[in-house]
Length: 626
Image (cartoon, rainbow, N blue to C red):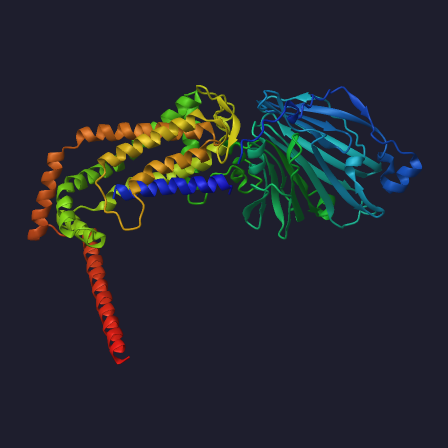
């Protein structure tokens, strides 16, 4: 997990803990326009000469029995469905280029997920004369340019024929919609030419920059892989080159950009001896990272017709990736947080977000509605918390009298305060319940919003893109740990947190302060300022959610306050005091626990005092003897 995420989570938990206790890198340079790969669409009718034409002698020496396919002319075949435009090439029989039709780069240019400059996929066959790279050879096809509609499908087959009933087939199947491409490889009649040693595959994928923050993009780029029943990744948050060898067979791997994914999925033949590399060139503004994945495929499976795979080229949208059935846990390409947070995002926030999308097209308004729904569900807990604080506020005069009696002894004050709570049947822990319930919500959203593609390029007020920070104010210098821009949503969020801290301190009873401990009330003002430095580079949508949440919380408590009668609460406390004193009302489990704890503390203090006296007496005796 990234440093900012760790710090942010610590600050969230610290702020919540403080409230619960009271209640009882420099700005990344903007990439130059050349940072986007401006690949122009392939011309379906165009053909290009071979990059290297060999004479028959040289071809025979290099490619042996496959030399007849070493010379030729590359031809492009274009297939479109509702979501993709895929360009195939007879050179290697490979996917040459993929355009995502429904998405654009941050510069509003067509989004080419891969092209022949950024992506190289190859299969190396173990022939009797040595390894042959199929991407160097020319295939033939009868396929034509095709445009599919929903419900249709098509196959694009490439064949490398060596003789009668001797050939290599690569077949791609596309549906009328979606981002999956079935990929089948079959070796027919080649037992005498191709050994049964593993076939090596290599995919070098230079990930392009589609979002505006190069430094942030480099942090989140990963290669995810599924092996031995679990999902792992490499490259997360790393600025250095990383290499990892996977000992167990791999079912699938994906090269994950911030919001987009390319993946290779083994449907029937697992990938073995896989090596994954994450390569970084900090001076290169054209590509974020180069992700290289290589390994072995059982050649016997390719000969037996079991070379069945899939490519995925598409958005890292949870509603999309979770439907890739051939890849276990493929939906986990979207980082929904820690295991204990994931269910909340998976089963509540993501479905709720997608549901609201059907009715609300403005994502700023959608976030407001989402906040209102969450706060409405939390209302019973908030009400209970407010009543608990009101009860303790009623006890403030009695606590003041106790404070005058015990003086500056915080331990004694704490004991007397707990006795008072016990006498009137008040549990200070009841005010912590909403805080504990709020914590997983805030933490879940902290993970979800930076990975929510639905917010990508959605504008609201002055923010042009809710999936990244809003930066209407640019600074002529960079502030350490803050950046060279000012996020207005983050500033507004910070102000709302400070106002909420002030309001919360007004309605919260004064707590006993332990010696040497910081003033917890001051911490409630300090933490939002610290949090502002972290949130300045986080998505504007997240800052806006926190802003609205703080405002709604204050309004919610004001409304609840109008329904809480202080005189009635005071009467309840007095009634509890009488009933507990007379034995009519049983002590709560909390009161029993508190009483036992206090007795244990008093006994421990007594034992410590006795031990201290004995030690002092022995010291005096030794002193007299000497």
